[in-house]
Length: 349
Ligand code: ATP
Ligand code: MG
Ligand code: FE
Image 1 (cartoon, protein in one colour):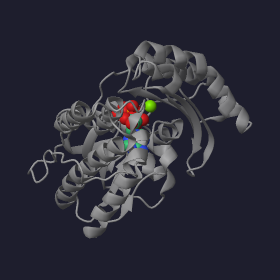
Image 2 (image 1 turned 45 degrees about the vertical axis):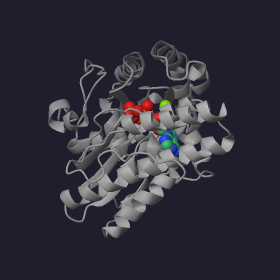
Image 3 (image 1 turned 180 degrees about the vertical axis):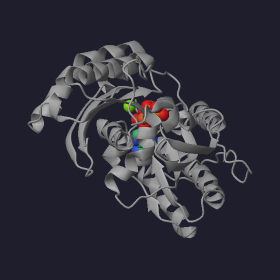
Image 4 (image 1 turned 60 degrees about the vertical axis):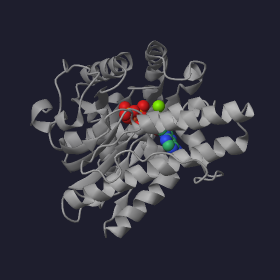
């Protein structure tokens, strides 16, 4: 099938056409980073309006790129949550209108499911079940992906998401938004051993995470430097970023190693979500998997942060199983992945 996918849950307006042979036929994305930069984070109302401004044009451009008409697609998929509700509604309502106009089924996609299934778009041999570390701007979870719509959560953060921690760290040092790429760049030049930061939950029996204490510890170190020397040099910032990233890597590695023991025997380790674009973290997780004798998979970088292709691909996966949705399916600001349930939300076919 050819599926049109729409993503509008945060600050990327994204559209893609993906088919059942894993081909990304078209891929369009407008990032609103500049619209939100002055505010140091995403402003929901600005995001929703920007989605309205860009979405129609991106859909047309995607179809034009490959010379397809709306009637040539087999289904229209859109993120229906979780996310900033105004933006989600823009994308979902647009998808409903397109589905209705074309007489094609609608697939309401859980944004986290789109991240969770994204590695299967580029990796044909990645079979269920797999152990997923989902690390993004709003989430940090370990899940067993048992199948499409079938997720079992083993652990999650009790406070900040890991991407959020990267963003706050960047903000603290005036590195701008989004923080992840900036922190990664500086960390590469820094000394991770100069500052001592905590490793919350490392060694704990649970499979949970916590990043707010780490962030506070980092802030205290920064404030101490400020008081002592009146400012932060580039080297100081690099060392702080390196310390932060090393602490995050230790936390993720410890939790994932423990989860590999508890999850399905022999299951591959997969990482997805925006933070999965971090090369240092990918390398560390690859090592954890190798030590446990497991396969490691991570999507290509462009597929880690929000995009339309992962939504279209989740649409392909659901559509193939007959999970389509009625046109009155609601947009959901909150939607835990363990409720993404095929049986609950699929009409069946
Ligand atoms: P969610 O998917 O939980 O709803 P989101 O869609 O806003 O949240 P994503 O687009 O998946 O989040 O990821 C964005 C997050 O990824 C941001 O917090 C950003 O800082 C982080 N990120 C992006 N690139 C990197 C990187 N190279 N290193 C670390 N973090 C990164
Ligand atoms: Mg974003
Ligand atoms: Fe996301």
